[in-house]
Length: 211
Picture (tube, rainbow, N blue to C red):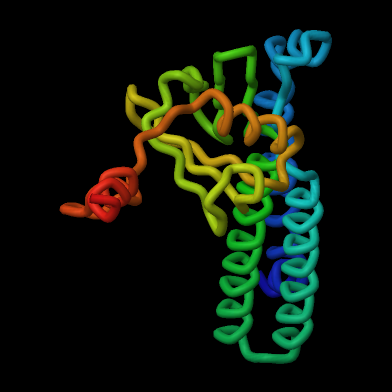
């Protein structure tokens, strides 16, 4: 035990981080680019396009994972000359840091590399980071919530709610966002939810004023 303990103090957190890194890569590789996406990528129809997240999420997640490794090594270095009880606490702390940073990297990588929106004319196929794709259409959208703007083109993000239920979000950092936002403005006819109860339409108010 005394021979193994110094090794665990130095490298237990790093080992867990590397293990989670490998699990994340394998998981994403098996659920990454599908046959459907490959087929869509070759499609020359301008009304058929793919929306992807920015790759910056992968780099940010990996940076967080590396920072976690540095913290784990630092904790181990501080605990080397401590008593056994504090060394065991240090090992637990290293593993906890590794789990937190590893899971952050895992989810950020999955979101960047697995979340997709496929548009084929009127049809929308949303593939979340996990699970099966949801299929809807522009003429089946019930509501569109626009963040920080009254129009879809300048919005920071769009939260789409189809008639069949559920919802998904597209951000303006995704590829082909402008094309999607323009199609939302053009093809989605939503009721005017900004009118207050009891207030008459502007045309009626104008008629009464003229009388």
